[in-house]
Structure formats: C-alpha cells, structure tokens
Image (cartoon, rainbow, N blue to C red):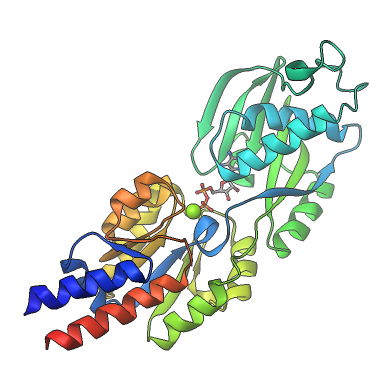
Length: 315
Ligand code: ADP
Ligand code: MG
C-alpha cells in the first residue's frame, strides 16, 4: 500500500505542476520545518533591468555604460545581461559623438558593437574584470572594488545607499584605478511570492532568504514578501550557500531549499529537500528532488501539503 499511495501522490504532484524525482521524495518532504529561498530568480523574477545610473564628475554616462557593457557581455549573470543589453541599446541609439566606436562606420552590426575585451575574468559572486580599449576595468559589487583597494567617492556612496534602500542592486564600474560610475539594477518580486510565503508560514515552516546580494537590497525584498529581517542571510558567496544549509541542519532543522541558479546547485543537493525553479538552470534542476515547473513559489506550499496528505493516506 505504501508505494501505491506514494505513486498516486507523485501523479497528483504532476497535476499541480510538481515534477517529483521519485516516490520517496514525498516522504522526506514531510519533516521539513525550514525553507531556504534563494532571492534572485526564485523570490524575484530575475529579469533585471538598468533602472538608473550615477557617474562621477568628468565621466560621461555613455562612456561608463560602454565599458561596463563590454565586460558584462561575456557573462551569463542576469545582472550582466541587463547591463550589456542597456549598453547595446545606448550604442545603437547612436549618441554618436562621444562614443565614436562604430557609429556611422557601416551601420548594422558595427553600430551595436561593444568594444573588444582582453584578459576577461569572471569573478563568481563578485563581478567581472578585464581590459577594455586598453583600460583595466572592473564591474561588480563593492567587495570587488575593495579587493582592488578602490574606495567609493562620496557621490557614489550616496547613490549606493539610495539604490539599496529601494531594493536595487548597486553595480560599480571602475577603470584606470578609480570607481567612476554606479549602475542601479532593478529586479521585481514575482507577484505570487508574498502569497506563497504566507502559505509556507501557515504550514508551520520558517522561510529564510538566502542571497549573494547585499544586505540592504535583500532586506527590502524580504520586507516586501513577509520574511522577517532576522531571517535574511545576505552576501553569501556561491560556494558558501551549501554551508548555510549544512549549518541549519546541524542546528537540528530539516531544511528545504528552493533555487534556480548554477550557484544554488550544491545547496539544493545538500538540503533534505531540494526544489528547483522550472524556469531556472538545468544544473539546479538536476541537483533537486523536485521541480516547480512554472517557477511559481506557491507550488512549494502545494508540495508540502501534498506530501502531508499522501503520508496521512499511508498511515
Ligand atoms: P545571487 O545569489 O543574488 O543570485 P550571485 O551570488 O550570483 O547572486 O552574485 C552576488 C552579487 O555579486 C550580485 O548580487 C552582484 O552584486 C554581484 N555580481 C555577481 N556577478 C556580477 C556581474 N557579472 N556583474 C555585476 N555584479 C555581479
Ligand atoms: Mg538565483
């Protein structure tokens, strides 16, 4: 009877938009008391856009965006894609003069080309580095600037505080040894996230927000979806996400983790129950026990409910 009930539960899961790896998954779901939620792409849409830009005196917006876009063009990060797209749009709009590069040279591809990059390096969880048009440049979070002993001028420090308080991610652009611009990148909370988190709480689970993003941005998102400030774990490097899950487990918690990114895969595998966002990366899906096909977080609550109902049938 036990396997049959589990198989029925698995079939019912498929109807709810849950792809369950094996019948035994429903059993491990039952005891879960803590649910760790990745921020970007899980609680938020992960579709980022460039919201605003601040440059220091003497630097043009086009120039800063062109350097940032060139470097980010080689990265797959959602922030990188937003910046590269904005840069390409700006170049295509052909504010010609200052930018020069390709404008009018032959139209078409040339008009939307970003300058070439040498010595590119992707700094996982920090940003990107490389040489653009002979200028050594960095694009990324404040920690990346600190690593190179670069400090923020006060105008950018102010812009950073404003961006983060608004739930945006502040991306800094430095070249030739100075931080010269700040790009505020906006993401949006998925419309269903707050309801999903309320359901998870009603089921007795404690939701935690886990992110590589900075604490202020993470706190703004947490407030929007009903996660307590003390349950936000921010500025966690990709390699350390699994350690956070392990630490919670060592405190006696039974942990579910929901994530979408390559970054999340080790944490998804470490969790007692790994739930992948169906619209996320294949790596995350492979590392998980269960996939929320549509990417709607409410399906995570459905999974908990289903496993409890299935296990009740068995008893
Ligand atoms: P998350 O956990 O939010 O998905 P990551 O661990 O991938 O984030 O990155 C953490 C932070 O590092 C980002 O919020 C961003 O500030 C910065 N970052 C990472 N990659 C890039 C990039 N290519 N360009 C700019 N900033 C980046
Ligand atoms: Mg993510």
